[in-house]
Length: 94
Image (cartoon, rainbow, N blue to C red; front, side, top):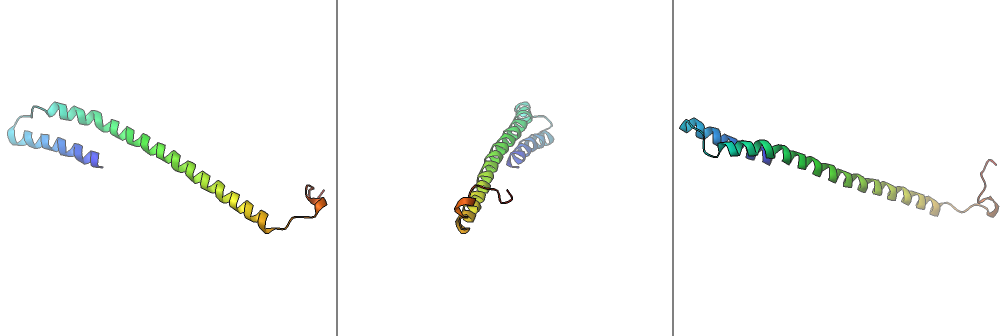
């Protein structure tokens, strides 16, 4: 939003000068073209930045879920007693 307000301020200054003096400023073309060229580039960079940080947040969330599931599995392993020696690798219905 700061970028949009800055561009608005720059272009508003140009239009105020034209309204007050009846002619454009010497730098009007440069300001207008820089605003038209740089604003889309800045939004594109912002979009890429958001996607890159989104990927990092996604990977961090996945790691947290894997650690939580591993902790639950470890907790179940510690809380239940081991089975009889002969049943350790057999399926209960076999």
